[in-house]
Length: 369
Image 1: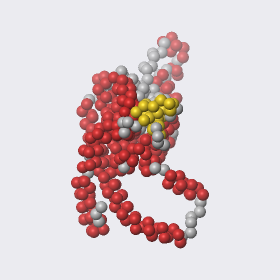
Image 2: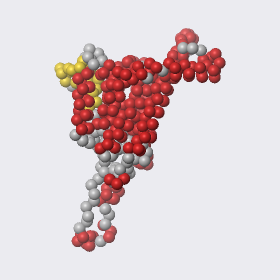
Image 3: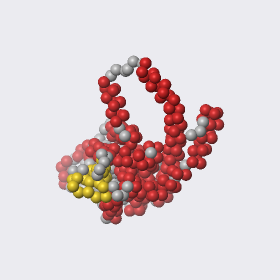
Image 4: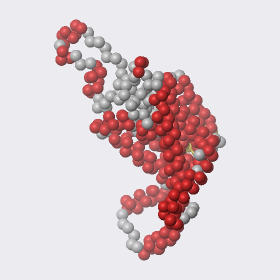
């Protein structure tokens, strides 16, 4: 298994832990030995064939396939059938459409949240009165869970669902009957017949426990800063869109270089979160968690990460999906500098249309926010 190393960072002067992803997530090479990217089987010696007889003529590839529980995924196409760039039209349209739907849904979510808060203000007064006259529910475990949940920050509560989804997908990889389905829909590969839906699903997919733990720790560490900066609705839109955008960048680079292979992991989306926070707070002091005496700014850390992935892409390093890393980082930087003003700050006309539709469908009950 191939995974990326993670260097844990923390913000000086605050309790928030920072983790710079020196990879953290997408594996273009880890499946190559399991998914058909093997050396050609050597021709058997004719003398040995005569001695062994037809019962031992099974090819090396067939023997390896028989020994592994993971079915073959899409193989690298031969030179005369290389995928054309025209096959990226649908992934491009999917990227644009999904990104638009993500931010549109986030705008509606924020509208409904603000509306419900106004209504819940009066409900809380009634709930407080009922809480005094109603007998308390028993259960130490439930009380501990509630205390733990209430102790979390808004960002940590937001990413809890993402972490749970990644854990469920990780468990699905351990079910042998599902592995062919997982290879098709939870690994992204431009040479595959299924290219659009895996662009999103692969960002929730991990096959190694260390791979999953490292990525989720990074996401958990940066969640408080990112959500406080963007808000939970905008954060979810950025995170989901980043996963698709980074995968599309990976598709383009793989097609350009003719290097096809499956990738998976959340590092593209996590790199967007990391880059957005570092670009928004470039002067923040970071330190390696195991070496707190060495400090550096968030801007320098981001430059180092981008430089490493750029070198890996230009030099043809195939251990990580460096294109997905760079795509996620560039999307995060672009969104903080331009995307927020271009997309999120111009959501008012869309929200007004939703408000009119909701009010028209529910009469005056919709109210105004």
